[in-house]
Image 1 (cartoon, rainbow over the protein chains, first blue to last red):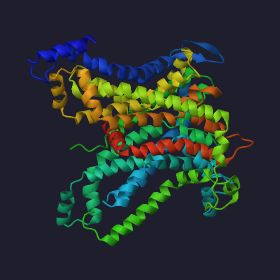
Image 2 (tube, one colour; image 1 turned 60 degrees about the horizontal axis):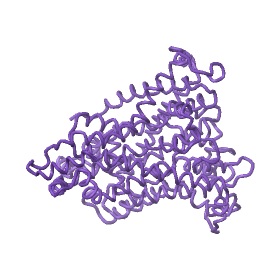
Image 3 (spheres, rainbow over the protein chains, first blue to last red; image 1 turned 90 degrees about the vertical axis):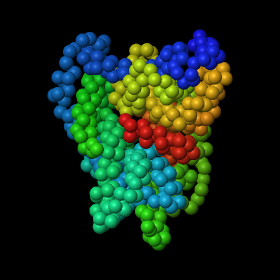
Image 4 (cartoon, rainbow over the protein chains, first blue to last red; image 1 turned 180 degrees about the vertical axis):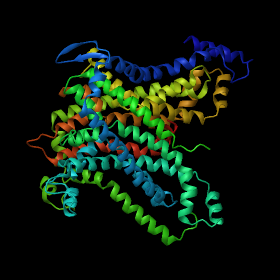
Length: 308
Length: 275
């Protein structure tokens, strides 16, 4: 309240030109941003540091119920955990597969929606539905659609010979491929909207100039459109890739990581390490390794950006 | 894109409708199944012929589902209010002041958004357990603040940036304090954005699954996504009821998002692209 009063007197004096920093303004911004920063610290920074400390503890509920210093014990165990590395391998396939599906679906859709008709505008609003519908609904919805007794999409897949008598979700390879597709389908709208914004910002003159130079439709797409949207694709692709890398909801809701671990990506392995194996310190080590691997991969991905 | 014949546009519009239908049909099917009699779902063909609301009546008569509905409303509303109350002053400070650490604090808040909840799941679960807050809505509310706050700060900052500084300066010369200028000038001008931000925080919390799964196991504090999972009784469950529960979770999210689409899409993109 002191600051309020000072501002009032400061303003009453009115000799100062407006907009210059008044005395209380020096502390006011910290007070205003403080609570938000506190939440960011409490929910992001502190847990990350704590995870690192936790990963160095020896804490296995069944054998060592109270945490004690264990040094690199979890990381050593982690290196020898072939199941975990298999799930890391699956996670890369999952991540790249999801982003691939997203690009494959979003690119033509964005080009299709980049028109000034009423239908195109309405469609670019409605297309967001998969993105805003919670995973829990989509997961159960797709389980219903793929169910071997009642699922209409199962009937279709059965008809064209992809699915046998039981649901694709019971076959290890098909289940993994199907859930990757669903994961890509869910993320597609976000990429479409980002691509639309990038496409709309390309000046018409560029296309006209290319046309004057005799470029055909394909050549205009390749030499004008692609370079203009490349950075958007890389940045949004990276965001979507990070989200996919940290997936848990969809494979957990749909198959609980099964059949036979076929959809156990590392997020699920980590969840199981805490809640089924009761090894929180080991799970913390997994999350630190995830973070490091993701950081390295992101550095490589950002190299694909165009620097003008 | 520029010189196009009406026929070609019409063809592309038709193609757009087909593509849109194919993309949305999985979600539409959930809604449709929720209003079909169980016998039609299991063997009534693709085209719905009879309309019924028995599934909604059935789940709304279930005590665990109603408790979850109440819990989800409490968590969502509290999260929306706190998110907005924290994001608004932060956005104002980032927009209007030049101070030491401004970029750092801004990136810190935005960085929280880039951090998926799975990345902090293990430490948060351990911390919450040690604080004795497992199975409380308090813990869930706190973790849900991370969902919407970063986007809220950046969206509101964008809107405040667009308001001319002179308006506030004029008010301050007339004897208004900084905070007074914020509440009397800025807030009324960006009210739609504030409502959009709160709505968004609510929607994100409403459908959140992972943190709820990890922090909550008791029936009286479960939220809707967990209750929906509970409808999946392996011995006697009804697809119609599961789909009706799914619709109850999905519909507020979808409707609120479509209503505030204009405000939200810009913010989402800014968050995604700037990061």
